[in-house]
Length: 115
Image (cartoon, rainbow, N blue to C red):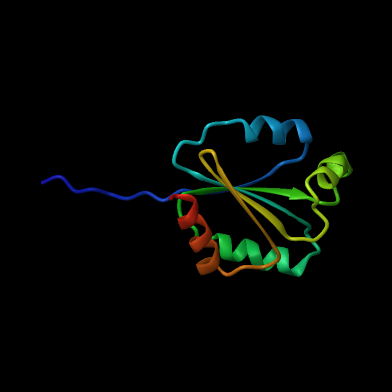
């Protein structure tokens, strides 16, 4: 008998340079959801959002600190004024939300990207 085993991937990493962000953003992740969360260690909604991400399967989460001055022009160009600010990428599709969302709300956004 052959039994199918589902393996779920949850990876969380920090992006420290703009060059690193640009390199990572150009990677083809196939069917993986890629999440870029712009926030800060001192931000309570950012910390709570990280806890919500833990229940999202098959995703890669990149944290970018708004305290990192190297990203200042990027923040301005992308109108990142409030945190947490989160980009969700699936293949060539993209969505964004600002503030806190529950894991159910995040899962709904991800579902919409699949269509």
